[in-house]
Amino acid sequence: MRVLQMIGNLHLGGAETVVKDLSQELRKRGVDVYICSREGGRFEKELREVPCEIISKKDKNIFHYIRALMKLVKREKINIIHSHLFVNNFYGFITAKLTRCKIIMTIHGMDCLRSRKRRFAYRFLARFGDRIIAVSDFLKDEFCKVIKGKKVLTVYNGIDIKKFDNNNRSSSKKRELNLLSAFPLIGAVGNIKPVKGYDLLIKAAQKIFSIYKDGKLLILGDAIRPKDIQYREELQELIKELNLESYIIFLGLRGDVAEILSILDIYLLPSRSEGTSIALLEAMASGRPIIASDVGGNPKLIKDGVNGFLVPPGNWQTLAEKVIFLLEDKCMARKLGEMAKKSVLENFSISRMVSDYMRIYEDLLRGEIS
Image (cartoon, rainbow, N blue to C red):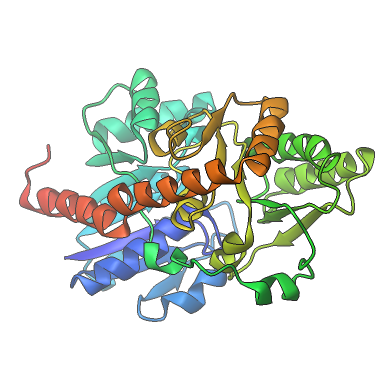
């Protein structure tokens, strides 16, 4: 079995993490895996054992790009193209049809339905592609309401839990970040874009830090696209307007996420939309008490009051109140963190995710999926 994973870049991000982890684990199971990306990134260093090919698409001539993809597929004798996110799904589909490969397309969030053009494209892809994978039942249901098709399956994301099994809160990491005297430390991980709801987080921070004067909010992630860079600038303006410059730290893209998660008192996910958040799974695996918005795939991961709290999307006031509640009730915070970790161990391991994808690959090659 020879599988080509297609992704837009190799920066730190949810879909990119899935591709990295899936590729490494498939390799361990004897699958010949190749990664094709239009851009490099931090993950290139971690993927030394997985062949990666950067095929840059600098011009608007898609035929040159498709030709390069076809060359790669034929050279490596690829059986299955597994693409992720809209643009790669589109190019992957065309390449698969021209090279007579099987094609699996994973959708990672609601952005697949955000425009008429994308909805039209996915109707076509769902009809003529081999399989579309949604990363949550919620996403699958929403997708199928708009795009009729019987070829849509759910495969929940999974993570390498061992990387986040750190029960010792690192004082050295706090010292490195000059946070030894900071309490509470609250944080969020994810690319900086409007859908992630960082503006809500900043508004909630004003209420939290009016009580906890020594607290800090850590934001791990960066803006990549022009409109996201504009959003980050708007966040900086909001921080100034609310006089929170000394409370909020943008840490950018980092390779030590597990260590930083281990020093947080509470993890927050105020997203306006989600598929299955890798960052949320990582925070759960770290045993952090979590407060997340009640959207998308989050309710599948977080059961309100059992292994975290869910708050109405867009409601920063309730978000702040839940943070303050957990800071005052350390016993509840500890219990939620322990239950979150247990949930990931039982349901969202990378082993389970890889087995699910392996089953789909094998069924496709046997011709059992029509």
